[in-house]
Length: 409
Ligand SMILES: [Ca+2]
Ligand SMILES: [Ca+2]
Image (tube, rainbow, N blue to C red):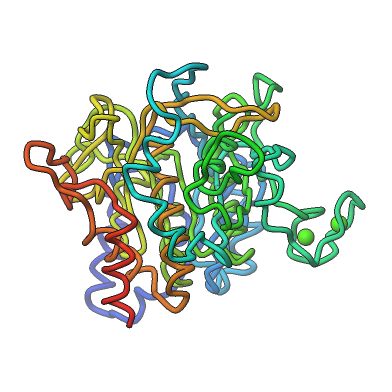
């Protein structure tokens, strides 16, 4: 610390009001000291994530940090809350295979989806955003399940509804980083199918087959992405009216922007369902973001096996992971009008997102905290099978509907 910084720190103690004055240095944070072990995303030094005082985020370009402070931040300092470098993130690939020896819908059976359908609850009227890779909106099992933005005219090159995104009739892509491959990643379509695939048009049984999917892409086909693109996709999902946001990804560096973006979702009453990650580690001790944020509107999900034990590779944590859900041998939709099996907490999280949509279709006035409580208080805990998660159990829709009925009369 140099002498000038010590003096200004002393001045702050003596003249407290002087410390609340903003400067371009105080709103610009290039620090990664928050959680040094997990802060590894490579900074993109000519892109800046700007959070404005009204809570909105934008991603701006500039030649370097000094000129960005002078030319962008200082002229509108009072409107800006925080600025950070954008950062690259790389998502892990998911195991994929064409055949499986187990029942195609073992997970749906185990969490008792049919009990909800017999009561008339299918996730109807609930929008679930898939903030992820590409989602194939032409897949026959997904096409009827995509939430249409009725204010937008598709393919005319005009942002008809003036929401800042051109031609977002179905959804939007915020991918700004180049990809090493052009063939579409199956990940986003697989996640979307677990939530809402329509079984009238193929073998996949979506958990909430009348929920509506909002595709918000930020992950490129090769698994690359940036934090700024993720923040914009989350913000878009909220603006489109998502009640649930599924985040089947991790590996984000520990910068404050992502946490702030999740806190904005909390303020807006949106439930966020996050995959715990597939590294077989305890995220209470070795944090993973966004899995480890621990917000009141967040459910972090571990992967359970066909025999209802924790999978060997699922991340865990008695504090920061809330529930387990089916996450291996999961059949779902992929591009090319077909389906395949995948393993991962990426597959477990959408089981919980679908469950939340079912619960909200039963009690539309419930808060995200009540939906989260109903899911947490209704898990199956089997002696000898306790999961290393906060609730020790695996989700059960039948019991969750009963608990929600008590929480929201
Ligand atoms: Ca638009
Ligand atoms: Ca248009």
